[in-house]
Amino acid sequence: MFVIKNRTNSLHNVERLRAGIGGKRGWRRRRAFFLFLLPSFAGVILFVLLPFLDVVKRSFQTAVTGEFTGIKNYGVIFHNQAFVLAVKNTARFTLVCIPLLVLAGLLVAFTLSRFQNASLIKSVYLFPLAMPTATIVLVWKMVFYRQGFLNLFLTKIGELTGLWGSVTTDYLGTGASFWVLVASYLWKNTGYTVVLWLAGILAIPNEFIEAARVDGAGRWKCIRYIILPNLKGSFYTIVILSFLNSFKIYREAYLVAGSYPQEDIYLLQHLFNNWFVNLEFDKMAAAAVCVGAVLFVAIMALQRIWDKAE
Image (cartoon, rainbow, N blue to C red; front, side, top):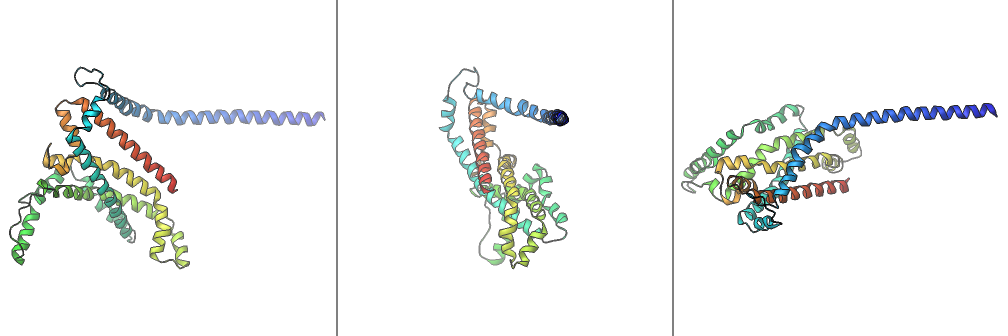
């Protein structure tokens, strides 16, 4: 009985010792984890959260005196025609570009995945990302202006066929400017979308596809039931990146058409730039808070849809 009791006490002591060692190791791992995240977390707080909180505070104040005005600034921007136009154009641009970009990238990635040298070919699609914005703007002006290459090409065809005369359409000064902006966005951003889709496709084990083919599945059934379900992670990443990049098209539109472009390509970034130049910081702060809230809600909604799809 005494021997059994001693053995029991020894086992308890060993378990306590292991628990203590495990607890120390767990604490050390947690501490290392927090120390690893601390610089990034501190950077986010210092350079993102605190400035945004300052913007939120300024949205309830006047620009010069800093007097508290409540929600007056929000009422002003929602009745501002320029703000309404910019929101409308930005939303239209985003809703048109993201589906086109996702679909175009997926189709190109499917095509490239069938080639052995896909890694070499996909680098060609990344070339537009490496081009300076000024170069892209120069190409726009050479192609789409009134005396640009596109009009000269169409005029030449008209002369040869006799179907029409001289073409002098100013594409950047009419409603066609919106579609020029869309085409530029797709041309510049399709490359990274193709790379992300291709990475997801190539990561799918060949055994899955081979097993499906052995069971009699054709190419389209393999795509529908094997490939597409395994691309959900890539799809979520691509949609988020495309959504955020759709707000970065301002540089091209600004350099081509200036601060006050054709109304179909007057975006929120133009509006913010003009308010900044005019020192209307109160309206700019209120608009920034609204845009930030919309972006946050949109990303959370996409995350929820993604979680339900899994």
